Length: 602
Image (cartoon, rainbow, N blue to C red):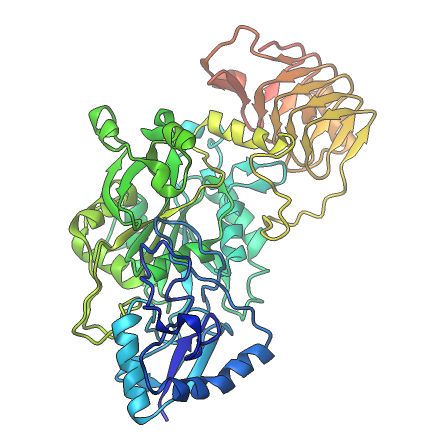
């Protein structure tokens, strides 16, 4: 017999229950926590007993498996559901393919599914009921199109982060003593069961490629032999002789590769952001709202708002207006009442804007339309593609049975409402775009009692390259409110409110305050140090009796004895590349591999 898959997130209501005569609760924009995806209400039907008997056996099977029923609530404005049940893999136990019914694959996105065998009048009743009351909550899909492809953009030349980007790409910049920036989006993907990941690079990508290959290449194949983290470098071709011109152009140049994957959506990420996010909830919200594009957004203050794309949304989270980095009067026009996002009155006054995080979920077929047909010359997602899609109000083709996220009805029905949706993220998030932002983000992990960002979350760990370094050794050292990386040797010195990177060597009498030491790529032997002394040079690390305050010391830097890097004159900006350092926002940055001779004062 034909079968219909029904998502039953609670027990079916009996005819004599008090709620039997309750009308179906509206799904989107409902103030009730009991949405149609959480409960099935059936009333006024003389065949209710037949329906209950038909599903009773399946309900008992559900209980035997010990599955806990989730409460799935569609957000009124934007936010996470209470329980993440998104199916991102075709073979996951939460999703099942049901038999063809009326020319469609009919299935349910949320677990667990109950399969009800029906015939005759009862089948007709069920289908009529589903079409009229639950058309937004059944999702048609093909079994092999239930995964997500992660696309991480490596970014541009990183001029605002210079000199940290002098010899490396932005995502390869060291972070938090042991990590690199690229580890953040890759780890978020892996923790969200997204195992197919491409990283698009163009500038100074050697160290980034090396890190990704060492950190993830040998560990991904175990995921059903399908997982990968691969680097896609900018290239010239007969069809396109240009390098990447922007984020959208980078994706467009590799669409021929991306479209080969049987996926429902593309998840577009940036490689230079610091945050922890469950993309499963993000994608679940995207699917629940039947959006073509969903943009991750966060409340923003006026001081930083001009650096971001800003948006206005309606009460159901649909984006009605989008402006990229507005200024002046245009900025004022983008102010909104952010209490719609759930903020209290005080926070809403402090954060009157809604900013794009540069993180998008885009349906596969919509991505092809946008980049090839509608905006073939667009180079950037934030300034061109997303505002353009908001203005034209995309629709998924109603008569295409191979479409991924259609409304659940026959081909005469069309998807309603705007296609570009906002998704609220109200946790810690930092765009590592400047020296000051990078400095603050690193030292933020030393805050007490709660750091800005924690690497100690066991439920969502941050992965990186295994280096097999020995534990750090501290001999008579005074360490306060600091984070120490692997393999460090610290002797009789004082370290306060600082981050010390792996393999750092700090000599006797040194004082390190409010500083980020990135460490070293390798150890120097005693023989190496003696040879350096004969040449008049100094070993890597911080020399004896040196004082470093409010600074960033890049990898492999050699700081001699009795050096003072304290910016005592409070210089705001200075470019002294020949002397081995820059000053930006009053922060001294010593260049990678630089030598600061003994006795130097900066």
